[in-house]
Image (tube, rainbow, N blue to C red; front, side, top):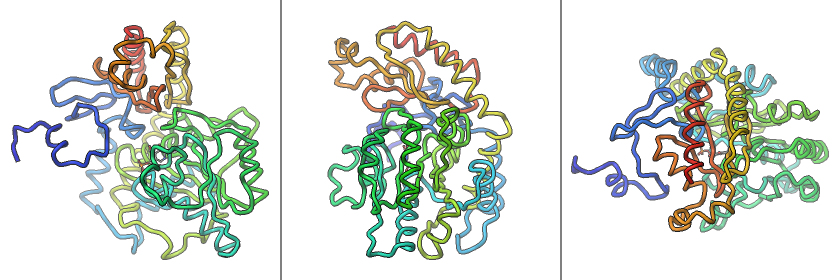
Length: 420
Ligand SMILES: Cc1ncc(COP(=O)(O)O)c(C=O)c1O
């Protein structure tokens, strides 16, 4: 292998081309900043798509990884695992504040596969095979991951096309459409699953009414209400639970039967998890589900270190404070390219005005979507963001981002938008 080859050349030659990648390779990171191989510095408001909740290479995580890897890295789920038990206790007592049990895996898609299996198995155990109670209801613009279960659950053709036959038993209803939800759900449904705040679909919060109707249907048809908090959970909205932030003050007080997490839950160490209420007890008994790497001592220690630091450092309060600062600043912008700002906590979507963008010759010539065009322009200025659909640019900064970093982001981004 030639040492002359660039990272991009090596990637193109040896790595499967399933991602549309930007032409940049990062060599190191610290806090809210990344440096590329040429030494250029970037303010990172992408955080690996909502993963690095404490920023890059936080000391607590490096220490937990180093200490644990000197003690015990891997241990099979054939045995009792102290670190896994401690992490599960944190989920039950601190995040959920409700009794239940936790299963660990390695990614968001796997956590959602676990939710789907949990719902089907519970219905099977309770009603028998003949009842055919296995349908999972999901919503448009959702994203639940790239496994066969994940793409069947995701109501977006772009992830499904070419992979037929898809896993059957999924029905999609328009997000936040209460009437259609009522029409579609019947005794065949094992679960309703949605993201309380959609990420990939464009930063769309669920309405309290939709949650309320879903909860009504849960009572009527004995199904599970399941929330995918892979992107919006683990503190990103300013509370441990995204749906609680969204429902706050609405008068709707609904709790789910099961929840999935990944991304920020491990702060950069690959881990996924699901919590299931006591209502689901026994559905996934011995031999029904598993993962060799789920909840290893190393993964569990890293994740617990991240969650404890978020808890003890006041990062969740910081999320709410920075959201307010960003909203106040953006409200003063007078930029025709920007339509609105939506989202919750530090999961914010800048909605671009596509009519204005269709008149920018450079954008039309580039063949890019407005969101990708803006993300590229911001990257040129050393500011990393993420597209969400064609017209939304996401900000997903570390949850401990500082005032100065937010000010820098606001200044750079408003300049980029003005320059268009
Ligand atoms: C809401 C949601 N669910 C599931 C996933 C899939 O997670 P992973 O890529 O870890 O499998 C994602 C990833 O973007 C997501 O945003």
